[in-house]
Image (cartoon, rainbow, N blue to C red; front, side, top):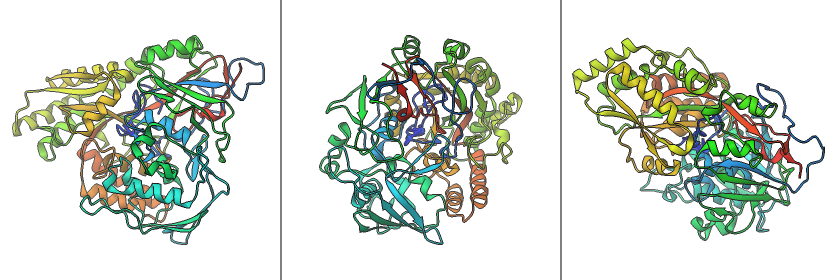
Length: 588
């Protein structure tokens, strides 16, 4: 979610200053953590690279500090009604809810609930068959046969068939349709990123019958079933293709929930979803629906949760980190999540472009930031200083990569590097970090810019945007005049998901416009590796390139810090830090 997550897709960014999930700030961007990352949605899910396994994938979680099973909070009267509506927080989606163009966390949260793909993930990130009956590879993992469950249908009553997937994937992959998650299809035979030669139908997608189709890949991909768990791979009804933009305002899905009615999405206010009784999958809703309110700031959401006006809050404001566990005794969570936080320095900024000067300045900026002190002072220890570009909860993570010293605080070395860069071209501007004011980022941005200013002897300050959507729009149009907050919430549990959506040339959540032939090549080799160990080695080599180029400045990994009210039970946060809304029950 889309990144800075949906992150993510989806999703580049991550949720608001919390550790909760996305893409696209890419990241599924999550507004607060927002922290997109996308992100885009999912994002993603980890986030799964961070999405992926990727960020954490681990862990469901119960009450504060409990990494075990789901928790039951609130009324002990037993039976929660099947038609109670669960209320939760969210943010205004950047775009209409079109799955292949929803890469940030606000839209990703909605898309994940109203659509269902071939597979979904359980609380720990394990793959579960959802709309698929089976997904079977050939001996070389280059040809996958998909068989759908029988009797599937969209909420408008039309059937979900092989064509529903094939047409949706072709639409999302077609570069002429300018979909933010188009690159997720880049390994399907026939995919093209050439804007002068768009491909309307990928030859790698073949219909066998209404309930069976095959997917031929360009390169072997052992974890293809994880990739297709991302929202970009859901099916679309025929009605979507008549007017995609109008469809995105009132989407018709096939997931556990559906829009309450036409116009259920009230822009800048919220959206109400109700249970889809016709859904056939692994996420059957145990409640009557989910009402998502778009909050301008997390402080108001926290107050509503305290008064039981809000059932579930997945992003605790940093001002409440010291007291949220006591305020919500037995009804809070603090567990690892597939969320990575950073700030991006665009490649097009003067003094930070590719080359020796830009390389020196990026490393100097990174080493001038006292991450540990900021984590302690601003986040009350609910973050972990970053040592790479993924997450400790993702298989293959390492804190000993070559070049990781660039992420360690060293004021003297930072000042030396900055002086070397000044010898090439004198810098006399103000270094800024842009952030969305509705995401709870002001405190850490202030702390980070203070650290930069103090240790480099330059001017540095934050630049606030009123809302996440506005920030994303300027990033998308390459209008940034300085650095900007970014992050990623894994879309599916895999290291690849933390890297490809954000740094691959032309990727939808690559708002810094980074490009590296060496990085792209290593990423491709890792994706096609025959074993997980070989893939991990290639992805680690790819990260060594990132540690040298620093397209973003890694800051910290997030925990999910969430709370819930007295009226709900069975609240569990999944591998990507998103609550399993379908499993929550509520007493009237």
